[in-house]
Image 1 (cartoon, rainbow, N blue to C red):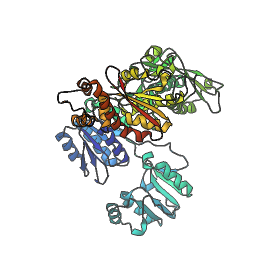
Image 2 (image 1 turned 90 degrees about the horizontal axis):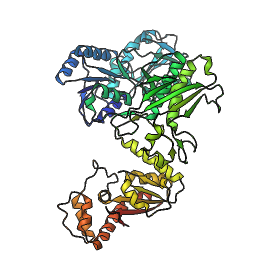
Image 3 (image 1 turned 180 degrees about the vertical axis):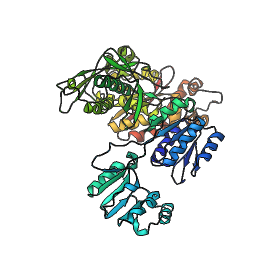
Image 4 (image 1 turned 60 degrees about the horizontal axis):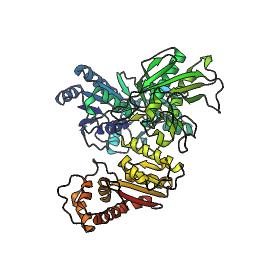
Length: 585
């Protein structure tokens, strides 16, 4: 069982991450005023002292705690650490992402250090800090307190001696010579608050965040999930993995650290596209660093491959500001068709991984004084056996030849991820559009595609796209891409679900409805007994030849009612295919 301490943006994100598991957990907040939806989580409202936390953890078998509380909740952090040590329960600190500290800002460690050479001060440090700032009013400083506009906050402000004239409500502001704020991180709007204060010409005073010393720290949802998977493996039925882009980035970071510092750490930090940082295991070979692809429980033929990166100084980088040049080596395919992030001939390394590598390496290069780097660095990515592995992927169909592609938008692969599958469909649809084919044919799989191909012998391979179960999403993509002619081919099992309005035909979303199928048969004047069938395709054997077309036409008509509106500016042809390859229109 997991116990989360939240009440913050990080707490809300932690809930989203844990809800994915479908298992019960506890979510604790001090005030109970956070608006949050829990499906599997159990909400706990009210502060816990040490004894109460100890008792709760014992009684409910807590095996992991997640501290996603506000960084300035020092007492709570200390209590969590004490209970963790006493009961030997591991803690994951879900921290915030913080920008670098600007030396032009006045940094202090405590409210007692607020300067008094100010006429008016806008304090945005929270309602509970009002009592700790009353002393500065006694020094002749006029203070306005910005708080949340809710009854409990206003009552607490009055209790600490603030008058109505001293209050303004977030997100409003007040005219003042200076502003006092906490180092609240990006989720606390810190950068935006700094920018607003600078624009108003205000003197900026910031209280540094307390230093926390938790063994396990993350600063984003992916890091939290991976930490839970590691410490409580049974909580998630399926475990996440890393994209090839993250592996390439980790190897590039490791190779750069070895080049610049002559160090070979076993794990390196990798900044993901969402800004969070995770630790990734790496290794080293002769002249290169590597990262082993970890697919988690996602079925992926690239699982276990070794993604290598070798570096060479590049004293004359091409292109303005092109400090880092990324190249594809052994086992990396090349684009041969348009429709990708880069033109034909370029190595099959997508934009997101390239940007990840640059974002992670630039700080290391900026801090380096190594003259051998010259003006830039050449990063060469390779994958031994990449060419052999690529034959078992979609790459040949997409027009990527000679090896695998380095991909990954988020940097993390969720097992059997719906998002990942839909993204792969989108890439196939984009390539189909770029092929210039007059029509795109979407199919549920290889079997239906094989039958339908005979109808369109002149279409290139790229014009045939598998939608799996995501019929609705694929048709929406066709509309967004401006594809005007689409053929939808499907077998009867998916067709009867689609005819019933299920645009996602996965078995977890839709099952065969015999009552609805009976209605379809009745409309087609095919009144047969289907009480003993277990699969929709068995219906074909129960129908006479002259009745099959009538039934197929009825099914197609119902499917069109749901599909045509998704491609309202285009022409949609729906084909129904039986097990023998006969096609009904």
